[in-house]
Length: 211
Ligand SMILES: C[S@@+](CC[C@H](N)C(=O)[O-])C[C@H]1O[C@@H](n2cnc3c(N)ncnc32)[C@H](O)[C@@H]1O
Image (cartoon, rainbow, N blue to C red; front, side, top):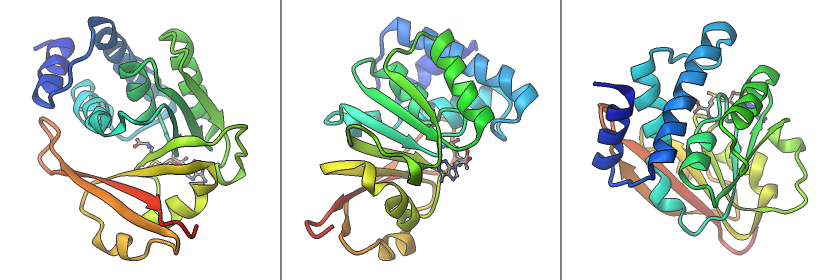
């Protein structure tokens, strides 16, 4: 089965309907990531099939939970995950990606140019050093840090009433118990990604009014 067909099958299984142009950009992004990975070692996953499931579908599975979010920061985004697939799927979503390693941020910048992603911006910086002109509706991360560190390092980027979205593998009971004062668990969702054996979890955190 072609990559495009596998992508379509996976999106359908997740109940996500995207225009044909988005499918084409997602396949092009997977190819670009595989190509750069051969030289720059951006992510441990190299196989094109695995990029599709472990990176693209795994990034897009959170899409239904971001419908209220118009501006999103992706922290520790590595090869642009989940930020680039989300920006492709939602051209109305402004995505700012923050990644401290230069070669990874450079890859993201190249993807922005080649895929014409006008709603995606890559910053090469440590998240704790970033002082944005405008704070974000949502802050997301996948495989970045334990929840308490994610919140402590990036909460200054969050607008009042905004939410943090942590994409986790195993349900992080102990990390939730260690959330910093002023932040609480708002929602937790168990998610299934086609062709991935284990379930994934989306942990949504918000201020409790004192932070
Ligand atoms: C395990 S990788 C995850 C990459 C990507 N989110 C993914 O799911 O494939 C974590 C990334 O966080 C970046 N990182 C670590 N500390 C950071 C910081 N303080 N600010 C921004 N990025 C950071 C690392 O360079 C690395 O690329």
